[in-house]
Length: 516
Image (cartoon, rainbow, N blue to C red):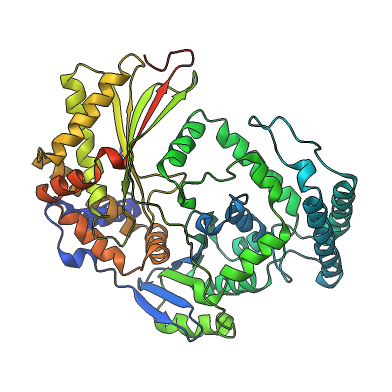
């Protein structure tokens, strides 16, 4: 059979091979020089451009330095909820008659003030008093129900003026693809990939979103989050990993699960969401990232046109929660007939910007085969994995954890735990396999070259590092990973893989005695 030659596919494969070639040997410092060009406007807005001449498209992202770290107790998930609300449009996008709708929106805000007063007045009657969430003196009050009914009535009155999906239609009409938004512990981002000649559309939409967001369909969006949360909780692993996160952290919201408890969703208010929006969505807390067929010289006047008139606001408050120094080994016994038995070791690790952080990407990959060998010597069949994920995110600018998970049988759990601990103690004693170390660094370099080949993925990494610490930290972070040697692995394993910095998780079937 005759095969046709796909020129585009061949060129793409050749390009990837060129990118991956340096992974054969040690990467040089120049491999990680990103070529990012920066301009900071007088109002504090940061513009980052990576120029790719000839590219017909541009990866466009806007990062705001806020997320779950900025939430308060009882409002877990509020940052993610704000992201949903910011997709509902502005005074010019998402409405058929803003002047008419604005009067109803104002009335809704006034009705919510009354609802909050009613909830506060009934605080003793409606307080949750049961350990198992099984008793309140009252579920509501006539005043609360009257306020809720008034809000629902006003929301119905506003419905005819709403034009859902307006932003999406605009982007799609002008060649936009990959419209997404993400909120994690330290950032919120909106992004789109556009033809280079349509980049103004992104600036127009995002400047409008930053200045004029209207909170539409508030309770409908609240219930969408509830449904998402319930779906997440239906996965057998979710309650376990969230309990592990809760045991791993004492004060930082990094360790809070989204939505926390179901009651948090019901606490959300337009007033609190507006406070978050006005406090954090300001130009001096924002970074624009563009990668593709544009230049810095082209983008500066464009950005100035849409964002230049915005005044800088008072610096948004930082997260004041600081994890205490670890002082005790902690154990979690989780009983489940749906989740496969396993043991897990979590150790606290520093955040991005700390000189030790980058090495843990390497150590995670080095430790897995070390644990596998110990398990094999003990005759234990198991599956070993490592990650740095807490809730949804795997990298932070604040302390988090490195997690080793060993999936095995309930009967082998104790032996698997002993084998994993022995392997980590071996690393701390200097028993570092050089072949494992070089393979780990080669894998990380290969993953990075794949990231570089994807403009959207690279733009995310640049913006994410800016919210965690600085985009300039990224090249040095990559070089630090390449420089990891056996002595550094030994030193860091000895410093961090200690009992007082450890959380042990054990999953076993229900019905087993704790001592078994």
